[in-house]
Length: 247
Ligand SMILES: Nc1ncnc2c1ncn2[C@@H]1O[C@H](COP(=O)(O)OP(=O)(O)O)[C@@H](O)[C@H]1O
Ligand SMILES: [Mg+2]
Image (cartoon, rainbow, N blue to C red):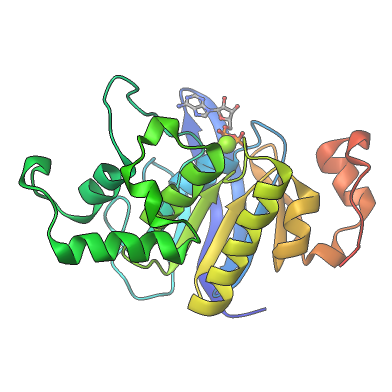
């Protein structure tokens, strides 16, 4: 295991009177892919939001990268949220979306040549065609939208990338390709990735470590090989059945 990028100790989060995270402790190793799996409601999204400092918590979240973490959403942490709320009555192309994120200037002034080249490069990084730029965001497929959101999260290039169920709503082939892409970003850029999923089969092929969450805590963790069917049954119930040590 690589040295930790983040150490989390005795993390508690209360939201709307619910004790959502209940004394969670773990480490996120640098330059690795850590998958967080668990049933709906186990606190996966809440853990990511605590890492982004979006919500109040008690306990310790310590980053070892030397950046300033006193503010919300530090710029070297990229985040792809579970759900994107798009205003469907506001026609916006992929170019507009990337442009707003890249430069703080009114859209009617247009984008300079440098910005256009950068947008194409951003899409290329995530294996998407620059033909997407002219398409309305609400008309592109789930898989294409995931790539655009990933391109946004990679700009500026993050040290830590948080992905919340990034392949939900994408077909199986699209999911495989998306996980391949994440794997490549980790390998080639050394990006530390925390990937929330409820698909243990999919993540066990790509993640270096798997953390299983239950009731606001890490119930068990280890390399995909170290997780026994018995442990997974405790997390997912007897139905998970499909998990195989096939890698
Ligand atoms: N703002 C909130 N107020 C009250 N309860 C919340 C809030 N956000 C999340 N929760 C509760 O916290 C639990 C964990 O939510 P979440 O972190 O989204 O789980 P997961 O991502 O694993 O599905 C759920 O029971 C959810 O209802
Ligand atoms: Mg969630």
